[in-house]
Image 1 (cartoon, protein in one colour):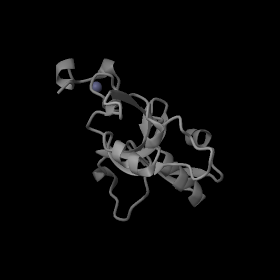
Image 2: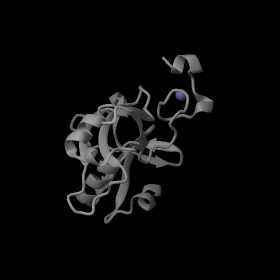
Image 3: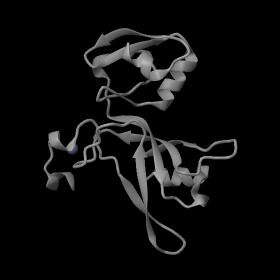
Image 4: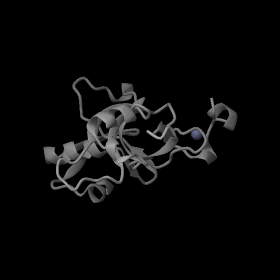
Length: 174
Ligand SMILES: [Zn+2]
């Protein structure tokens, strides 16, 4: 199966069942499962695959995908912003911050700040934001979303591209 090649697991994974666009995966090892869910979503053959834990009383047809957790990388930050507190604050520009990925070991990654955030699927993903530095100048901080393919350049939503966007340019700017 395709995900076996993509995910580089220690154990195996099987598709237990499928209903329309929903799949139930069975992981042999819990460690694989946690890592795969924590690193998602995934781009598989042009489609977005969101992976989440099974919950009791789950009815697939009633599952609402109105939001998802995503890793975002912030580029262009001054070094003093590479802290947990700054990450939580800055990440609010993108969505609800779940965690800030600060390495406990040195040397740390100081190329970009990595955040796990909740984003709404029906709202645009921002490509960046302006941040006022101590010199009172506004500097552009750019956002890169890990493993998300197909972000529409017109409306900023996930799952389609500008050529198939249902919104006109005017509507998308609102
Ligand atoms: Zn669009």
